[in-house]
Image (tube, rainbow over all chains, first blue to last red; front, side, top):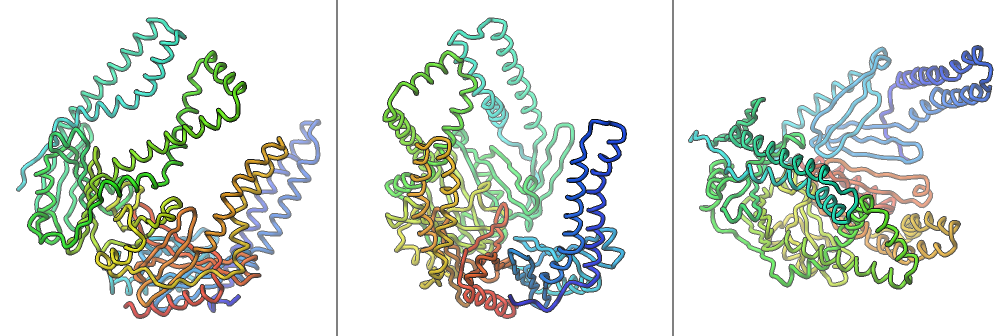
Length: 159
Length: 474
């Protein structure tokens, strides 16, 4: 499988790992709560604690160590004067081409962790579809936005 | 020009009838129950009557006030609408914001020479359409003329350069092969299901007895009778919808008129056409007929329906039809087919429902007949899907051909492609196949078309071709 030259910024991995840690922490609350409850109610069995723990750890390993790395490997994009080209997906690989002139608007959104690392999720909307790049440096997002404004001024007749 | 207009007072009555219609089914059930002598009692009866009277009275009064406060005026630049009883609403629609203005009329209005003017504007689904119902035909036409973009009047404009009308026999043929039997059949079944709740136990037992005691043959015959009735209903529905179908071509728009009881008049600007779809239904295809539809950006269509520009056309005439009407959408002569190695995947996908239903065999070995019979339909369908799938690209546009049930050919111009996508799953990667998808703007929602399991290199070619051509368009 051919890869696109632009990769996601390194910080993206950190962001995903941090959110993985948060996910795991939340999942750990359930077995923890149950564990504490056992001190007060005698009849409660032990297996929910153990299975909850196992579940949280498995998800934790996945979201902290595995998927961030895989996403880094499999996500790629290329932004040129004429189009935005995106490729992503581990099992089902999707490659999308969006002509610049079809883009209607570009939104950026960033959560608290993303903001800390100066990253933004870029959402590209055409008249017919919506596409997202999960992490971009704010600078790149800005350049892209300017490009689009410039290019959309050229033609308006089609839609 | 700033005279304020009101709708015809008949809208009040129409409103009441609409309200009443929603009580029709409960009322019917109620009457049936009563005649069966169950749960009778004058007490219950009286309350029901009072309830209906109150509802009618209330909707009469509210309808009257709504009518009283709904006023509009128009000028060459805009149409203004004032409405709302307690919360006043003032809407000003600028001329350039109007996508389409369509006329519609039901039977009663036709007698009174009234129409409803549907104004389509860009925006959210709810807000996008403004309906001014029950105004005189003449006024509606005048509004359309006044607000027409070019200032050219509908009447004065040069006569249509092309007119296509549907004769009665073609219409009947089209109705008979429309393939909407399934839909009607499903609705009939759903209705029966709904009614079951209300049927008293006594009758229910009778029916159950009937089914357990009679032959399978009788049940099959009943089923067939139901199917035939559904088919007749579907033909009637179709004929009512497409009666008097005429298509006129003007300089920059197409005008479509159709319908018997509910008359519709649509105007579609040529510049808003996004794609042309040729649909060869399972029943029509053997007879060599197809339907041609349009995907139009921002209105022009009925709610959730694409615009039919020819309900029933001979396959051999499609080329000349499109050539005169929409020359930029020619059906490509040659389609790149899907490679042979994709056949197994096509057959597999089609047989998934069959495989899933094989589980029925565990419940009762006789039930295994269900998936087997379905297999007789689905597996050939899978083959047909494989057989029909393909794509074509020319200098200016591309075409996808695929089949869900009906064989569909979509033709899109390059400049109307919103985005494209190549998708592969691991099995496709093993075999070197790719799915190619495109997004096209349409009303009310964008549409996504795809062709599955194209040759790897073919999909790549299209992708590169699209990439290349995006430069040239500027």
